[in-house]
Image 1 (cartoon, one colour):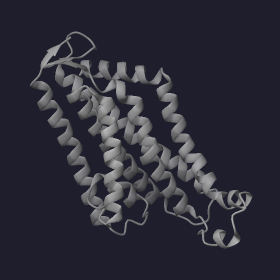
Image 2 (tube, helix red, strand yellow; image 1 turned 180 degrees about the vertical axis):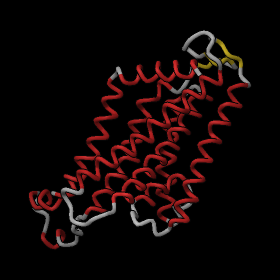
Image 3 (cartoon, rainbow, N blue to C red; image 1 turned 60 degrees about the vertical axis):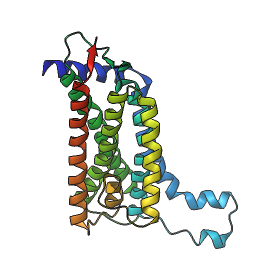
Image 4 (cartoon, rainbow, N blue to C red; image 1 turned 30 degrees about the vertical axis):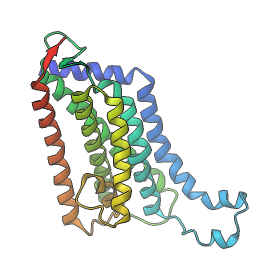
Length: 256
């Protein structure tokens, strides 16, 4: 346990003492604050651009649900990309041939190394989605008409956080197993974007981790059974990613 705590502390200090952490916080605040503001004053902005009145009338009047949906979408898009780029250098050891080099502390076990990564960075993804979704709600509720029960907003924010947690877990697995986190991040982000677009286009973005933010945008949880199944699938998938990483890593030769 002391090895795990030490590795988590080292990675956390390495992250928070660089511009990466400022970038994560900055993008989160930008999404939670600027997105609702842009939506609120979109009509005025379009008027300044001399958009015809007929086109302005076609835009729906923004409400609280629309404002929050925009925040959720941006957190799982731009926010996710920033997190993946920020943690990229922390989730891949140097690998040469069949040797896995862990530039940490001599005596650190493989299990402790993997566990520490799967605790810190997926948790960071969850907190990013959850906290900034709630901040977005705090901003939006003072700008738009409409009301959503707070308990529903908390549940929706947790779904956004869980979706980010899954994607970050996938990035951690690829980073550790390939020691090429940069390539892994690119593949993950592009694949997720393509898959979500395709599934949404055919109307079947359900029962998977990438549908969680969409369920969150419904707010009333009318399809509660689908939400519960998707949450269970996501949690099981995260556990499987961890187990696969642990098994594959222990089959390698370790070099300090």
